[in-house]
Length: 425
Ligand SMILES: [Zn+2]
Ligand SMILES: [Zn+2]
Image (tube, rainbow, N blue to C red; front, top):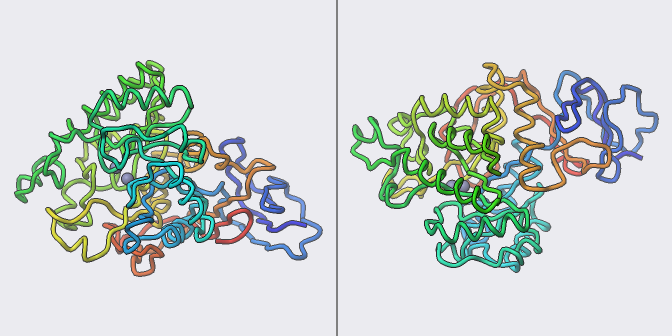
């Protein structure tokens, strides 16, 4: 007996080169049939979804979110963050370690799994931190956290400025096979910066961060990955220079992967003038030259994955002005429509390429058993309507926070039904 059947949909499963109309069935949480066109005979006790005219894809994976629990539950919780993820078509998220306390021990990895097991709508895969308490001075027990289920390690939010610690972390990555996810901003060049350094920062009288702050750390970490054989993953790439450094490193065979966030390939730093703190994030919004380079990187495969860097903050925190407000924007509910509207419809990526960057590739980078509709795989599925137009209405967000620069934008292409292990979420 099936738990769920999705019939008549256009199935796209990049991992298996499936691209065609057919049916998909899920039994006991696992995919049991994919691609057949014959009617299912026994549909009793089965949820049947007619996906005629819709795309049926593997459940989307966001490999970079901040769920804020423990410690900052006024901004978000694992329950609300994953509800926003489900609403955006994501069935899996990987969450950053910069909570309070920092996720820097095996016990804390287990605690995230515990909370997620009780409250999460989606699968939650935690990262552990690279250094204790994000202090940048002492490596964590990465071996122990790996055994407890950490899918990778990151001090996201800050850069590990000590190159010898980064070398040691990447050497352990080479031994154990996990990715080291790096937030790249040289601290001294970035000191006091609240936006990109350029015409707009000068006009607004704000301290800006130069592209070089990112490029220098990307170059350093590529060299360390090359030296050690470790797996470097560059988070939220934002500069043309970093894209080119990663392109050249890949050509040399360095084990480097990267991701880009929608705001970094849609918005420029001029948005700060219009949107204030809802356009404040690190790394900052850059220039059209950087946007063009990121899109080129997405097209030629230099940029492997699309992620959101979902970073919730409350309205009162974001109301503190450009200097004092915290960095980041929410992104889980707008990511897919932004990808469809700004990458697929203009022809930068095919729909299959876009889905690959949100399913099979992040799954491979994290080493998780998701991101495909193979028979026997976990029944996580996202159904997408590529034709519907809707306005972003942040008042309806499932997140606890409202900090987005995309309010009121009309976007074409939205998720419709999301199933986790065959159950609608
Ligand atoms: Zn970051
Ligand atoms: Zn982040």
